[in-house]
Image 1 (tube, one colour):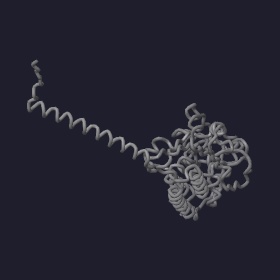
Image 2 (cartoon, rainbow, N blue to C red):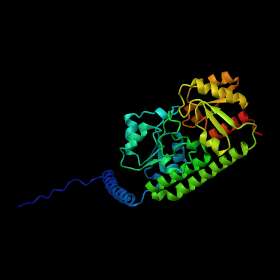
Image 3 (cartoon, rainbow, N blue to C red):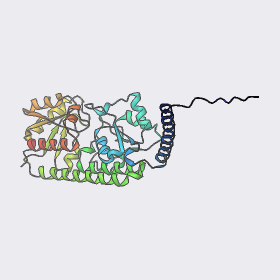
Length: 331
């Protein structure tokens, strides 16, 4: 019996090289997959740096509170201001998306005492922390009833405009610092450092006001809206407003006549209107007195143009000081 053994053809040199390259590619690919798997495992086990961690979501009712939260919070927080740029905050109504922001935020900052009812109503439905600044601050309200709500038609209601007094703004910053530390203890040192820096800037602002208003020919400021009571008391001035706490109330004829006589008697040279509301009330009184008008900014909100130009709380307060000094004949 004859046995025949058959063998396949021996591959040529080019074939052997191709087979070798394919084997090496497969081996390298397997190594790469293993390296990536190890890298992913290490990354998952490594703590995420603070800068890359998710920011705390803070909702502020209007500009002064948003400013304080942004300055103190720095890169650890994301701040949403519920009051749109250029809008007057007293009559703010919230959109459904804004209500959701309030409900979902890590922290809500509001003034309280009925200053912005829509914000307060939404915040009442939250499970998370909400800070009501008028309840948290050591406010000395003068003749105003400190335990009352803000009611613009009530002459004995609480004046809400605490942020226009730099010393009270320091208290706001401290309260915001505490609230942020409560929700994010890991950021405590950063919150403290940034709050200290802002408090120092506010102390310098307070000193500029004390020096700038120390020697003036007049001490009476007449405004369309009584927003500057805390500021006036802090620096030895008197405020008289046409429309009380409401920025858009119709002037009472008797009040208008009394202020006309007072302004003439006290040699008032300027009637102040304000940003964000019509100057009509101030212009009416100025015509009766025979003087001109100017504006003071109550800092309830900045316009888009003001924000783009770099204005902020401190620079606007300095602008207000310059206008007060000119109106009062300060040395």
